[in-house]
Length: 325
Ligand SMILES: Cc1cc2nc3c(=O)[nH]c(=O)nc-3n(C[C@H](O)[C@H](O)[C@H](O)COP(=O)(O)O)c2cc1C
Image 1 (cartoon, protein in one colour):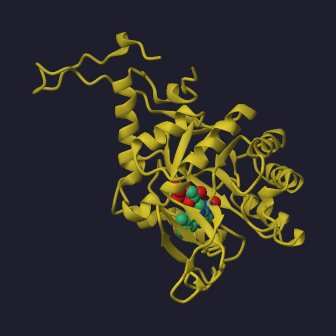
Image 2: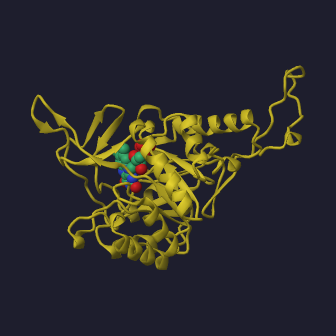
């Protein structure tokens, strides 16, 4: 808990009669990745970072997770592949990305120095994940790797890598062998026991866990009597999934010692604070970037304000500070 003696006493020229603002240390260590504050943006909702350069100084957020990469460029699913639903959004963008080479050669040079970039990767086969990870070894500006385990494993008939503990274990093992970079595994929420999946990642050498990815869902247009997405099924994200994500972060945090990055429905600072209290070390904001491109910045500032108001000297002290009476 914060020590009131750490309060900053310096006064600004016009504030001699105001209560000085106590400084809160927001520095965060997420699985060996040094972040300025605990707020990142989530994969697939922030492009390759370059798209948001005009909205904010990227150095003011903790960092960003780029759109998931495969070895070769891929086109995604045919439209309609995005739909607005009550309290959230459905997407079936699928595999669309520029490929790892274009990411390294064209996208990364556009990112200012000092911005922690987490490269997200995926594949339809086990070997593809490891190949992409190898390609990213030693690449400047890549502060860490996030493995998107929500991709269908073709050999197992389309079950997500993150839905079967044995497949997940093999995936983590193979990427771990391919890279020494800080390694986060992003879990699928479409499982019976998130605690079991988190434990598998820890046992296989992951440095941290990100959760949750979008929840499998669908919606129907009663006028046309067709699914709203061409792909029929899609990932459900946005405010409605926050309580599900919180529950999963809480359960995972009790199952493992490695740090957790909480994701799901974060729209305002208090949402992010809830994830930290439930055991997350950092958070990622996703769908809200579509309606408010400045959201990550505002949420980072809001967490700091909360910590100051509640008497915490560092935002790191919020992690796991849930009071259970
Ligand atoms: C349009 C869209 C594309 C996404 N693409 C990816 C992706 O490429 N890789 C990934 O790991 N997650 C992807 N996600 C999932 C998000 O990163 C995040 O886990 C999820 O949306 C839940 O967070 P939110 O409710 O804050 O959006 C995508 C989400 C959306 C809405």
